[in-house]
Amino acid sequence: MNIHELVVEMKMLERRLTLYEEKYGILSENFYKALMDGQLEQYDEFDETRADFSRWKGIFETWQRRKQKYDAQIQKQNIADTLRFYPAY
Image (cartoon, rainbow, N blue to C red; front, side, top):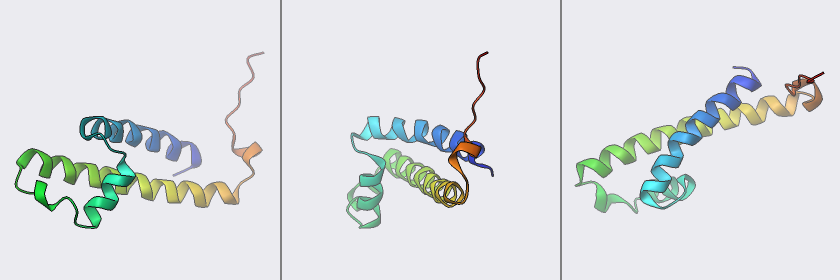
C-alpha cells in the first residue's frame, strides 16, 4: 500500500473506532490496554459486549498495523514529494 492508501484506510478505520468510543465512552487505546490486561473479563458473559469488543479489538489492531506501515514509509520519503497537492489555478 502506498502512503495515500494507508491514510485513506486509517481514516476509515478511525471512523469505525469512533463509533465504539462514543458507545462505550473511552478511547480505543485505553480499551485495548484494559482488554489485553484482562480488566474487561466481567463483560464476557454479555453477548453484545463480547461481540463488540471482539470487533473493536480487531479494528484497532488493523489500525495499528496500518499506522506502523505508514510511519515506516513516511520516514523513508520526502514529505514534499509525498504530499498530494493540486493547485487550483
